[in-house]
Image 1 (cartoon, rainbow, N blue to C red):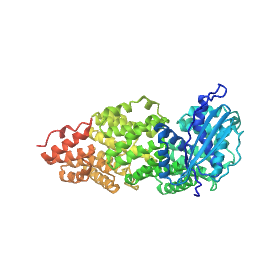
Image 2 (cartoon, rainbow, N blue to C red):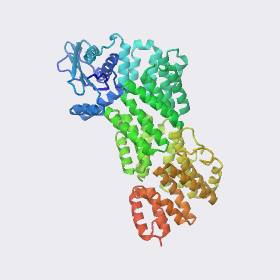
Image 3 (cartoon, one colour):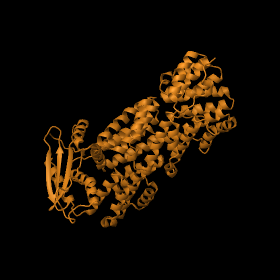
Image 4 (cartoon, helix red, strand yellow):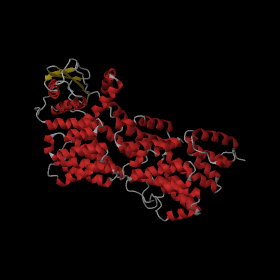
Length: 623
């Protein structure tokens, strides 16, 4: 058939079927290694023969999913892989212990052709697996390079990677540190340990190790590029995006055009992420394109899906949620097929944001619920904290205040990483909860430590803009005009001298609130008009509702009910499914004195309120 690409494989442990004495019986640790590292060994031999093989991370996740579903689902999983990628060859393997040693087998399921099978015996399980894999490669028309049976370091690295991918970072460290040969290659060992630390969320330890290695690194281009790629990942997770871009760029320069395509893809994808957060979208798209090409060349479908998900995240930062959604849906589907659990959960959270921005609330809740149900499978403390905060957002949007409070009071939040943006996000959510419960002073106290200046990274600055808008509303409602006047001088009104961005409408609405609170009515009217025009230009439903939620009360306060009704009419489409949009309609019909319309609007708002309290002035029909 001319198929020469292996893009996925599963590995299955076959328990011993004969009695063995204690000397020949494998330990639980060895069995775990064979389950996880055996497939990595097979993949390595197939790669060495010239076949393209999916990264073991994807294979491990697929294996876990198949194991959870039951062995009877194996055939269906293979069929699904073939349907998603018609040129995929799915390789399976097994190993069995017997009195004389070990037997291993490998097989290749080729679309439209009979399966190929190879078998080998050896005194050791790794020897049997290597030989079986080499024989299968030959059956596929490829011959691997000579096997380095004596290279215990290679086997150690495979075992450590298997433990890391199985979310067992402590076991991975123990495996690496126990290898005497690897101890003699100290730079290589330290890099491996740093990568384990990154996976486990121990960023400070990894940063210290990598900085030391970079200071001592020689002229080995690939090794230096790997160091820079790992260091860039730490900078991204620490939200130091300009620094991350420099690390990734230096890694790209060090690797050159003829380097490892997968490493090149990692570097370009990393630089694209940093450029996205700095709103350098043209450069980010160029890097994403290069990364996607390199990953496709390496046969790494999971990383191709990561690039698609990252493009979706970029579209969200550009205030294009409708364009983001198909990228995120495609990435989620691919991660599901490949069995990459943690990646799928992260994309589901972004899909929740994209759908919520479009006020497609029911599908948004479904996406977040699907992610939250799998939270026990997330190993990193950074990822677990992020998941709790996304879930809190959902609960607040649904009016489920008690559940939101429980998540915000989670003791794990107090041991969170020292990340400015995440800390500010927690303050924002706590302030939102206090405000919704009618505790204005407590809300302001939560927000008081957060400065008003804009941040360089777009995702962090979006939190700042949300804080600015909420604080301006609480201060206005609480009559804190003096504070509002002081704050007005502390920040340049958004959109005045710079190009509008995704946060401009929110900042302009905040400026309008401050002017209103200070009694500068004409200035407030101009700022609200500008904010709503920016929201209209973006065309994001949630932004339109958020700005109208501030603008309509201002217009009603200025005895302009007709203008308020005109603004509210542009949000009426979402009033049956979103509480804030419903409350806008309720305010307008109450001000208009339309009793019949008030009854219908009140019932809608009450249905959507959850634990939120409808303002007392709107609880009675208009006179």
